[in-house]
Image (cartoon, rainbow, N blue to C red; front, side):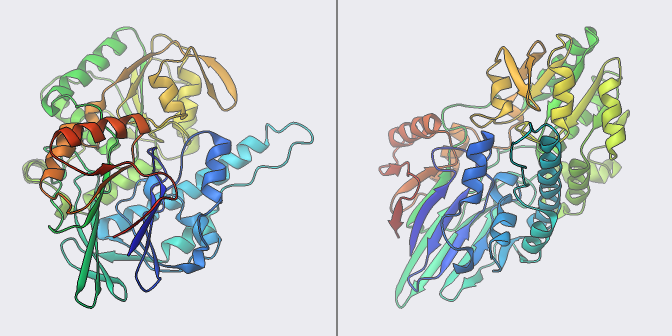
Amino acid sequence: MKIRFHGAVRTVTGSLHIVETSRGEIVLMDCGLFQGRRAESRERNTKLPLDPTRVKAIVLSHAHIDHIGNLPTWAAQGLKCPIYATGATVDLTGLMLRDSAKIQEFDARHLNQRLRIGEPEIKPLYTLQHAEAAIACLRGRNYREWFEVVPGLRAYYTDAGHILGSATITLEERNGASVKRLAFTGDLGRPNSPILKDAEPFPAGSDVVLSESTYGDREHPPQAELPEELRKVLYQTIARGGKVIIPAFAVGRTQAIMYALRELQKKGKLPEVPVYVDSPLATGATEIVSRHPECYDAGANKVLDDDGMLFAIDGFVATRSTEASRALNEKKGPFVVIAASGMCEAGRILHHLAHGVADPRNTILICGFQAEHTLGRKLVDRSDKVRVFGQELPLRAEVVVLNGFSAHAGRTEMTTFLNTCRPQGPLYLVHGDEARSTAFQSHLKSNGFPDVRIPTVGEEFKV
């Protein structure tokens, strides 16, 4: 079989890897949305690398938008094949794609209201109808069970410990007496993270491994330090009468933050302020998390045994309506608001930032990786001004980065995982900004990995 690298190559977003079997059948691993500058994103997401009708199957690693979010675009252009995922990922993907389509349609309407005379109308990248077409193709599969993808090619999922339902993927092709294995880490979670089980090694004997490299140049602070760091941010912001605005991925990050807030409250360390989760998507995702206890670690199961609730916080409010969300923009006094999207590229977080970035009393708390050219990265880089809804605004709010909340493993954590399943051939680094992939490449080579490569877009390798 051959693999052609297309998405999340020398960048983080838009995960897409094209596998061609020896029989000439095309299988995709992931089908993510590229996120960045608006014009570039539009170009990358709509200009597909091959005719979607040629694709015989898709194997998904997990339900984050940068891994699943372009499925409706492919469906709009003719994709009709089975899309395989773990059971929890199937549930989350339906929720995520419907929400993404609504955001695409809403943002197009919003931008069209600002068009100058003579400017062309902006169309959504895809619609709810296209999302439903992709969702209809989803097929659930279990962890640790081989399943046929196309004739002669089978797949195996192991837990990646990243978000609910996340998986590493092993593809195995048998051609007569020849057996070839290709493994993909997807996104690896941090060991000992709350709620979810740790990542499991994929089956031994891979000829080629694709590994994420999101944090390939740095370590994360110990998990035990995070609640205290969060507590400091909350108290400092509240003392000056400000809001804590937290952009967070609806799946994974929001639940991790809620869990940490719950632990602070249990210890009497959470200030008495309202905590708003202003994201119907995050609220829906949290409900799905509660339906999949098979993914929980021992700590989460103990919490459930003790009081039956993982995310119960006094003062918690889930806002669902647009009116309730808008009301928060006018609300005075200290409070905490968590809203999607995690990279500040769409959704309700934009409205909170539009009303909050210019106020020095506020804190914008960044809890995860921000891709290049996103609004989230501009906040992390503490630009003097940021553009929100086409308007330049001064950035006077404090920006605090707590990457320890990231659902991605750090450099040593990834290295430890890869040591358990070294490939017989090359190790390819994907899903990382070029500088971070390059740093991780050097680190791995100095730790005994002889053949570590960083692919380019369109590069092929025969397994």
